[in-house]
Image (cartoon, rainbow, N blue to C red; front, top):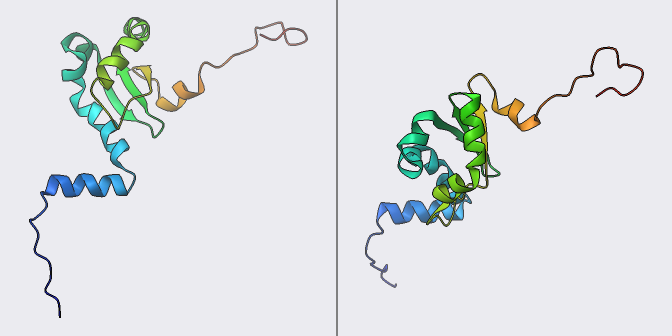
Length: 127
């Protein structure tokens, strides 16, 4: 009978990373890490006005902002914020940011603005 091979123990961090990769979860865990690291990644000024809430499976980061003025400002800065979030990151890259004002749900933001017909225009042009 052959003797079992003796090998050095695998560090728990390596074992966990290997498991997450084989289970297809490494990218999602990497994306979720952005939420915890937000202040360090974007800086005090942005972190003081906005905080991340969740990351969708497609890589969309949902961030709650203090006001619509901050949403406008951060919307214009989205390419720079994405670069800060994804710098040096292999797996788990953020692909999009949805800026949400207090009281707005992630679901309504994903649907976009609702169009309503103008009063008195029911018969003709409705928008």
